[in-house]
Image (cartoon, rainbow, N blue to C red; front, top):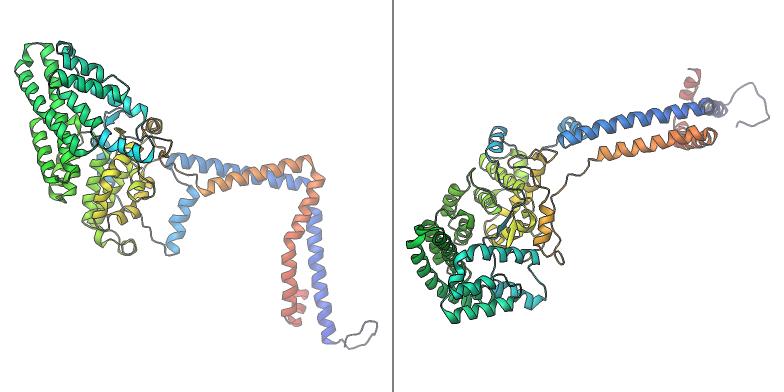
Length: 536
């Protein structure tokens, strides 16, 4: 035994081990104490100031890189160099840069950014919108939307010569009435004088409570409208007044035939609706502003006649024509249909995308870039409401109008929604940043949110906004680090002694685990090794 106070010539091994350990611990404590005592307040000021400066420079560079390229430099380098070493696979779909650049130049549209368009598939006020109000007590249409419809009716259904016919003069005032009951009363008064096509249109739209009643009134309007059209067609070249009257009668006839086709579609006579729409497009090929082809596309999709859908897209998905969500997403649906039933994200990540899959993914990216609000409605991540009578292209209103009628067609194609779910968010990694540059289309207009809030009932619907890019983690981290170190530098400069005490306490706490580890190592390692270490 090693007993204190008893001196012997021979040194017990256990006593030698205790002495060696004590000597090592003493040396370690002495080194730590000397290190802490040599640290002056100036050192802490210099340390924190240098750290703040370095982190500030990193923050400035990261922010500049993010503003220019839309991603974090540190994150990009980490993914590019570390992920391959860890065996990661990039699931982002490859794109054909040459075709993308070509499309970017060819798809420029000289259309006003926030132009409001008439919804090609708008519902009937009396038979659909009003029934919704009776059941729920909610108003599906905003005042702004109904005011735009009133302006459309005055533009399409009236002309300067209406005062010559009493029935047309009454309807000219009726279209300006804000009170629905006053409009309906004026339409009945007009019909009492003579057959009036526009009066029958108003009653079919607002008074009829079922689609069957609306169809009956539109057929009545068709007989009158065709007679007026034939008479004005013969006199259109006799002067500006007759030409304006013929233009009005043309708009009335096209509107009636289109709504009759929509009635047939709603009543289940889809083939009849397709025939009516085709005949209407042949008879009036120049009236593309009505977007009758979108009604035809929806009816053909209901019949699952995908070959005819492709033929219509080949004609209207042209660089010289304005795009729409119906055009872009229908094209994506057709390409997704070819591969969606066998598509698996796991298999695609292992073997890569085939040519057909790549085309489908690119079509989805193109559609999402045009209108990024549609996928959440198709994937039922947001609840649908009744579509408005007017839409803003690339806006939330257009997304609602498209998904309301086309969600069933996406569900009918096996695996199409799964492919959309796996790929649609990848679009935003391809769009240049800032958004002023655009990719395949003009950059997303910033005015859509304001216009959509006027078109959509915000009382019970949350307007979807363009998904903004979030700041990368490393920018937030460097910003926090820069602010923290700058604050430490300022406090150390103002209160050097107090901060020195805090710094020594922090370092002592920081080294405490290391002291604990050293004690554990001492108890494990043999005394001979400690003896050799002390000699070194």
